[in-house]
Length: 223
Image 1 (cartoon, rainbow, N blue to C red):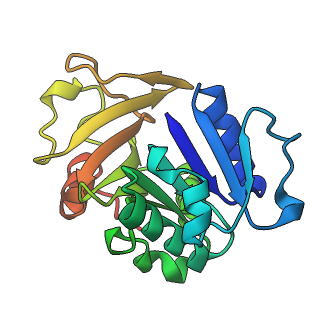
Image 2 (cartoon, helix red, strand yellow; image 1 turned 180 degrees about the vertical axis):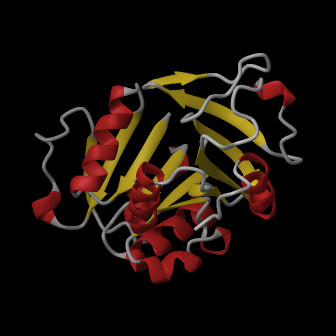
Image 3 (cartoon, rainbow, N blue to C red; image 1 turned 135 degrees about the vertical axis):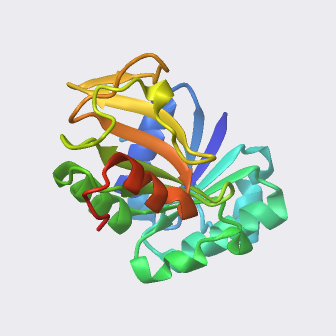
């Protein structure tokens, strides 16, 4: 898979290193000469260019990319880059980094963004996930599917502690995708019971979250 990343700062370089480690071809783009540091990610391609300029993106051959990640520290630049990638080059998948939470509402398909990644929201969710038991924590939003990735740590007083996962009447269109227990990740199996303290990961529509919360932890209230 070929991936172009707009923004060669610490965030962009980290993403590039991870993707290259997974066998993908990566191009890093930045308009700041001081950010062009090929020695830090030697296996990536590097391009000194403005990712908001159509001519620069043509030089970057965005039409040959499977994914474009707009990861600069400027929300306006990320929106423009994503919009050009989608509308001018037909890139199948775009990811936009949200730097300021007040701008998150802009990062939608209307601006060419398939997936937005809000650093403040993710950090907040991870803090909540680490300290809450029995409350539903939203970790990620899948805009195209109108669904969320949510986590719930099963409390002691859940009516389904010790019950096989296959016997739990989860809400419609709700999928239990993973169970984290004692530092291990388990693929959910219908006959395997869920236990107190299990971290349950679900993909679920927003409108079903309250129903899931009430089902698994009726004495708790989502925060």
